[in-house]
Length: 551
Image (tube, rainbow, N blue to C red; front, side):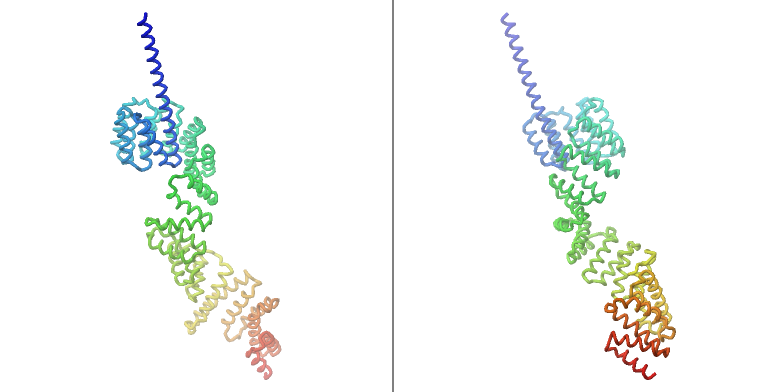
């Protein structure tokens, strides 16, 4: 009887020990899962170093649990530490060779090394050890296969098995969404992500990935809604802010893009690679001071891409720092490949050269821009204006002829400049003996000024230049071609005589001379007296009046 009691007592003690060990294992497993989930979340929110720190501590805390090594190795892989990850996986295998996940980890590394044949050996080993009934293993291999989008079908086959084993696992549906997206099936991808979100309302990843699908298809409102939902679920979900910024940038909502990206930069563990993008956003938001401060730090790096120099140069130009802008532009042109340089780059450079007074160089920059893209009316107009300023009248006239083709209708300013270019060129020493060309140019000038009168019938310059042109076409004043235009000029100028004093003197002088030639003494005298009233020192008026007295 005593033996039976002793046995019963020992049995109860054994059961108690087993229960304690079971509870201890459960506690350890719960702790491990908590740390693994924390690390996975840290990886999701762009905190790789923190994730590695959490898992490194977990490996030390649970040295006999081989699966923790897998998660640490995966964090290291995703952080670009492939050789370190391989050692971690090998250590996990040495702890427990029958733990399949570390074999998957080695296979994942082989996939990253573009060696799918070697990876499959590890995957087959893991499937054999787990008898293809471990959801985590199936998910891990599927994730590894998606390193190569061509293997997304293999990934889906494994995930379908995982779903059959447990159709309430959110990770399975997230991975299925990833696989469908690799197959360019956005509909099924979104459905899978939505299923994951419905299974766990506390995770942001499905909403974030739905946003990526919509961003990819340029459905910006839907993408914005999804990213905003991810942030609502998890206000610290770093990458949602990043993509929300990209979404706003694509819609040219620069201020909102800057706000979202600023939040991303405060949350991400490694903000440096994103600063260039932020500088672009600030540039689009026209916050040139902040953009320039960011660009200035970025362009000091030896491997600075030419595009950074380009935007920095333009941003400096817009901020009014023309001297520094010119320096950066020259660095850009020296570093960029010819095929990388855009017509707008030379266009901006030409405007910059104008600002610093280098008009001759500006013309050359504008020509390079036009060589790349001839149909630029703004650049062609600026080039034409500089040619006129430099008194290169033939080049200015040619530029305006090209501009007329692009604009179909020249503006008042265009007509005013091209008309004067034709007029001034006709008066040059070079054409003194070429009467035919002179007349041709004057007729072109006349056409421009007649159109200017139509567009600006109340502007005195319309009539003054038309009158001068007509006077040049009638150099002996025999026909009086300029007479009606000078008369109209007087009519428009008289309400403001002080402002139009010189034009009035010119008009009265012409009319006085015209009537003098016609021996029309009274109107001739009247006009010359008006000249003298405006300019008491006019020798021409005094001489003409003296001659009229003798007539």
